[in-house]
Length: 67
Image (cartoon, rainbow, N blue to C red; front, side):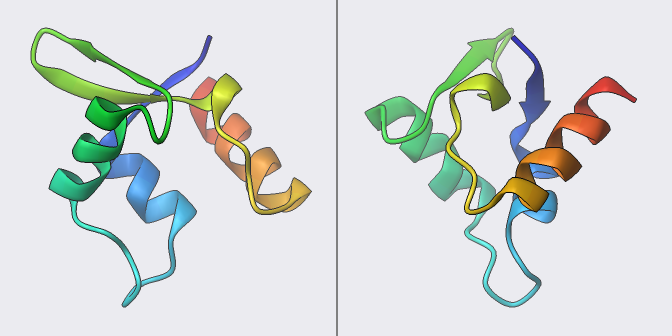
């Protein structure tokens, strides 16, 4: 299960000017709206369980997760 920091995820997933705040994404994880984990107080998005808007987004996120 590849995990990505919330701060990185918001930059990769959302266009500038329409990005939700880091706190908003943390709330989504806390509320179960998106899948993620909290490890040592740090929030991470579980890329295996996120449904991307399209195939290209999925490919970009996965390539960055393995780099």
